[in-house]
Length: 196
Image (cartoon, rainbow, N blue to C red; front, side, top):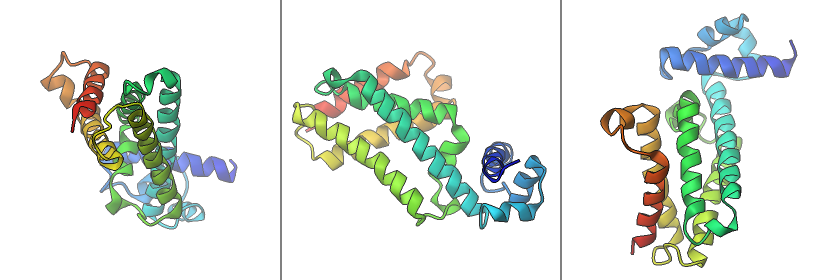
């Protein structure tokens, strides 16, 4: 097993341990046990539990950024003026939360992370910049132009994050089983356009 393999195995084991025990109770010992290494072996890659969780959060934001950018690109330039790129980024966000619930949870639990980690700060900024960029591009075409870009991006993110949490926790389907998430995100985009 190479050094990089062990690091990846520890990250995957952390996801499993968090899914089983919850993020607050997941321990380095339990994670190391899942991989079949000593507790001390984790120290070669991560200083502490928060370091491991931070690496998991960085990986999550990188994956979310990649999936969001791909979704926006798939819509293409024709979807700028209608806010379709914004809706596509929202759909990618919800899909990420549903497919990677453990990673998603850790990403937004600053008390579990080294919140000042430069890699974490950088990738969070890159994700934020993508959101602001697609909102700004849509605004130059008239979509949601009456609201300051940062405010519109924050409102959109708040709506999509709430939807992602409800969808991830299967609460949305339990309460409103007939809701089509994609259509709902399109309506959110239209509502944001109408604000102001």
